[in-house]
Image (tube, rainbow, N blue to C red):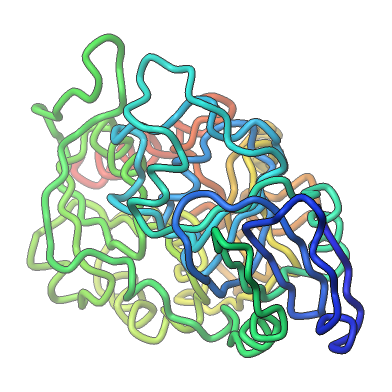
Length: 398
């Protein structure tokens, strides 16, 4: 159910649909979408994006990279696999809310520990269903990711003008350092490996390499992939200094994914990365936000994208091998490939729009990718990156 209100006056007199809506989504340009609420009641203000993945709604909602965003799911069947703690990428959802076409369905999955609506309510996250997500997605693609206010009210009472003001007052993600909001409070060790039938997540007991992972919003499955590649992983907060990193005597350093503007996070992370590059020969591997900040540390620029890349069907070409990988992506900022300095080459590009998806130093084992190789949409097209990181550490020892 949706209603477009082109002006403030129209907003003030906009009639609600006849089917007793319990949720409302207001875009900063004046468009209003009514629907049925689920999850927690309340109001959230954020940037609106859309995700085209057909599975993984729980992983998406708990991916720290979605902090500051409401996610529109283009696939209509949301909720049918329920939720289970094993699939959380972090303990609590990072996304501010979700928008879906149909009301969430009851779970039909032997692993399900809860249903989606109850899970969201317990974690104070808002959902709105019965929305024309096709129309909403077209609006995002044509106009860019808008600022929005979303409300779930069981009594169906909405102050649309007030929601519009909240949406228009939202400062947006440019200039926002959100990594500090989602990073760990203190360092910890990680030894879970990738899920394997029938026992779940085995423990890493034969690690070959000591790796320090900088947590800018790291997904658990990235840490599992590092452990599966033979790494003994120590996770440090986003604000860790080069001295704190080197105190662990690592064989390699990993730069994680995360939310917000890389230039803002880079005010403290980029000097640390530059120090590691200048003063050590350590292999360095970055993903997503880590990729962007590595590029900044090497002298490149980043830019805000119109509506970003969010989905599990993104084709990426490896320029070295010609291979095409089907990847998972979640980013609203990108590295400007035209700004890469001498000694740094572009390794991967998006086949959707030609945007940069990977870089490496010519003479050093320092590389990164924009997409998420741990997410397995291919399903395992990109696992080789973790093995490449491990091989670089082997070579350094040898």
